[in-house]
Image (cartoon, rainbow over the protein chains, first blue to last red):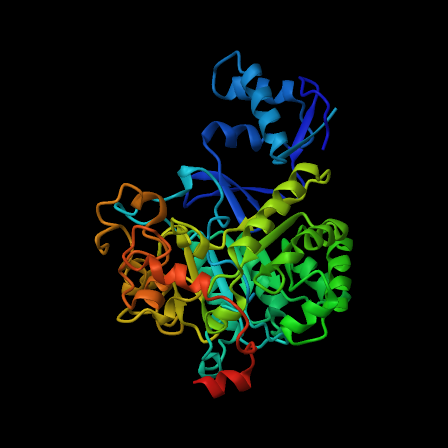
Length: 94
Length: 386
């Protein structure tokens, strides 16, 4: 597990052994792993689906702000990514 | 697989958002367990399979299983367990996995490891299998082989290496009881050495063969407490991310497990002959309709059949559950355990110390010991018993 700081230039991706998937019946993104499932709320799903390993957190934040016509999300996104990394839902590379 | 914990606590381990409100329309059967076959090379004395499995009808064919997958997915099932018996005994396992993967299931193979060679593990990977849960009976060859009545320890060790080599997430499941619970430290070390991502220390739940062997398998309270302490210390000093689940031995508790998150709430299992059940053991419950998927749609099974609707919500509850503020947390515990120990499936699970039958659970823990030999799960014993 990486102990590096999560910052704007970090690139988060779905953690090893986890799968992110849209479930129409639940109207939500879910995170699947061995014998388990986490149903994500709307904002968690919107962040997680952008965590492809290709985009930086700054780019993800900008995309979210554009999509939802808002601003000032940087702090929330970083806090979520840190939490998710702690649970191994996400891995983060510099 | 035969020793899996009966509590679905881990099956959907997220927050309250996942738990449907049973008073309204029930949520989807998120967890689908297919018991593909009762055939098994192992003969574990703690197996939860019914002791009369030898009288079970013929196994469903491939087409039936594929239809069940499609219907379940349409209802919203997303986690799929492939179990048994030993699912690798079916030579259409790869085909079933491939269809499940195509439909969007997260696929879990729950296996003894017997029959999992290089060719099949590769084919399963190609088919889209997501995860393998491998059972061990103990950390030692001697006890593993005794408890399963086979010589499989070395084979299982090789299979564990194969699972890692093919980059599957690996869960090691060890059913704990009187004869191996003192080896928890060694079991955890073994799991760590093998590179397990998760370990389930699944204290025996007493159904099926385990119910039959209850007296021989029941640990003492001292053993349970020691195992919990060893597990706690191991967690503190472990440096690999290996998640350890300690499935609580509910006979030693004062409150029941939230069995299956309430019957008919998230879990649907289909037995080898096609009987749809709301939990592995529910066929024992009298007076309920458990349809066969050969003649009933899963839509009917889940939303209309009494086997799935009867114990939803709390209208069925008696005292002390009915007026209990904890009923929304544990749903009165396990219906099968209530039936087995009190004769009435609508009673409180007698694990609860508010149950007037709680003394039966306490007495079972006090009368533990090996006074008679274990009866191993086999077709011959199944036919002899029933």
